[in-house]
Amino acid sequence: MAKNKTDVNPLCGQTNNDEKAKAPPQSKAMPKSSNKKLKGGKMSALTATNETHKRDDEDSDIAALTKGLGDVSIGRTPNVKEPNVNVPEEIQRVASLLASNKHKNIVILTGAGVSCSAGIPDFRTPGTGLYDNLQKYNLPFPEAVFDLGFYRRNPDPFIQLASELWPGKHSPTITHSFIALLEKKGMLLRTYTQNIDGLDVLAGVSEEKMIECHGHFRTASCISCNVSYDGKECKRVIVEEKRAPPCQNCGGHVKPDIVFFGESLPTVFHRNVKKDTKNADLLIVMGTSLMVGPVNQIPEMVRKDCPRVLFNNELVGSFRKKNGPSTRKKSYNTNAQRDIFHEGDCDSSVQMLCNLLGWEQELNDLNYKHRLG
Image (tube, rainbow, N blue to C red):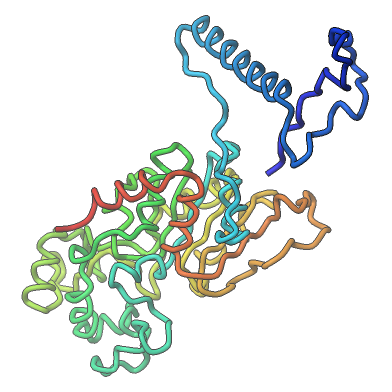
């Protein structure tokens, strides 16, 4: 961080013992030597005193102005903590963005990676991902478990999987709590999640700020006639009886309102995504492969002057490690590059970020508040 310039020292030389030291009159152009520090990098005693008086005068002015405005709180803008050599430069840059008070319309995009530390597997990680562990369901291909046509013919594989994954067994992660904290601080425009685990809502994110792009388990409907079905009854039948609930209207299969391949995304997604990406002043993408459309197009939809942050185990989509091309309509200097990528798990990245911002206690309190059990 840049250091403040030391005040000019008015005593520029030594005086004889038999003469009184006379301070020179105030002048805008002072000798260059008067601005030097003493040997060892220490300020003179008088310079340090002037610095103290200057700060006292500023505090007095703030107090007087506060009183004049009817006790409205006025103070210095909080800054990011001093740079830490142990904190990656990318995290420090994101912290600077959040501390600047310039970003009040943040859009978040998350994938399965933000829920892994809660004990919910992602889909595509080799060996541990959900799609690599579906052999017991004898599927023609892994994605068939979420295929609408396959469910119509054979609902059993999804029913078995849904009974294991049904929300209510897992607590929100630190990353989910971070999103809720951004909303609490008035900085969140919207969060878009591709997950169906409901952990954002459980973490305290309001329905107004939350768009579950691929649906959720809280409500249910028939795949044939689209008539609504009681969500709690749907859970009971699937979890306890391990069968697909029959529609009371047409007899077709009922499923939770999560989006299968072959189904359209919720209306709320289409109603908000263009407006939100246009108004976004910062995009943060976390824990996603950006392989499933149309949600994976969100990073391309934000304005060219909107910084993009990626917290992920790998570089994905169109994100860059360095500056984008200099031909952009609004280019970025070295302190505000469009793309910031930090490699690693989401929780660790978020924890470092909040520690640097001084938000760690709020984050941990919020996470503890919403833990199950």
